[in-house]
Length: 462
Ligand SMILES: *Cc1c(COP(=O)(O)O)cnc(C)c1O
Image 1 (cartoon, protein in one colour):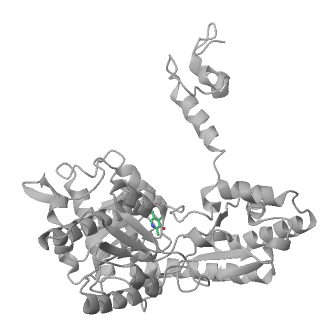
Image 2 (cartoon, rainbow, N blue to C red):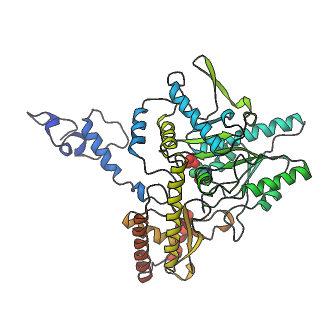
């Protein structure tokens, strides 16, 4: 039957939805269909295709929020039609964004949290670009004022998330990504000291390294930069990529000094949609003081007769994620965040202990002192007839998605697995995961893969 041709004598919508119009053939992939279809049919067909996606709650690779309370969902729904950039039309949404900025500035110990500048973004990537741009402009202005060349900016970091590679390429900056030394899981302060020079626009330590979950030593780096300033006159600012750690350290590791308590920390980015517990689509960039954000980068938008400064790569953007962020701040409070993140950290440490007991793994990070995550490698990997990639594949049969990947740069030979523990991942679920892991390892021990080497190199290349 041709698309949307009524069966004789009956109306289309009396047919079962799988026995009418679009449902009777594969969905169009390259060209919009000529005719309209019934909304229920289309909804169900697309809904069905989405069944092939993995189950997000079992996705242990992502840092992003997968447990969204119904009240936050409802607020998202309330805001579906609101554009957060229209501050004139939706002044209360704009007000809520400002409240979030000040709450975060306060959480990260800004000297004057009420007077801080900051903004929401689409995520940490955009926030990192904004932080990086501010560093570049500040550095260039200083160089020009001194009559020195300002055409070779560089940025120092450890094993960073891809957004910093993008920032460097898009905005013409030399990225000096320090190699991970043997026995380390991130950059060290001593490495930073060797890498900086007069063209360094800033140092970016990561609070919660993507590959391993550890915190890079912000305070130690800051102290070394103080020393470098005293000895060589180089005043080098720090931007902290606290994509995940910005919502963990203040609640679980208050003794770790990484934020605006250090005068050298001029800006911080974090992902509201990771451990900030907001749904996908929101990040934050906060500056220590207004003077740390060059005013040339700020565009002033008219807002209820006043002027509102904005600094963003995007323009139109949904408001729901920002409102849901405020909901989580109010709903949980500091105590609630501490409880949620604390439970995640406990669960991560439980998982680390259980995996270690199997005797198959060497723990690289056991969930203590950094992000609620576990990072490990296969012990005696070269003697096994299978790789961690095979473990990932076999675990997928039970719906678990566990990332296996090579470590960056000079540790590329080492393949690791990382499990992120997030809100909504209880002890019971973890016990079931451990049982599945034990079964998987037993199976692979009894049924080694053939051609392991070819397989490993295939995965490396992809
Ligand atoms: C996730 C992450 C980013 C990128 O953040 P998005 O919110 O995904 O844009 C940047 N840095 C680190 C350390 C991250 O973990």
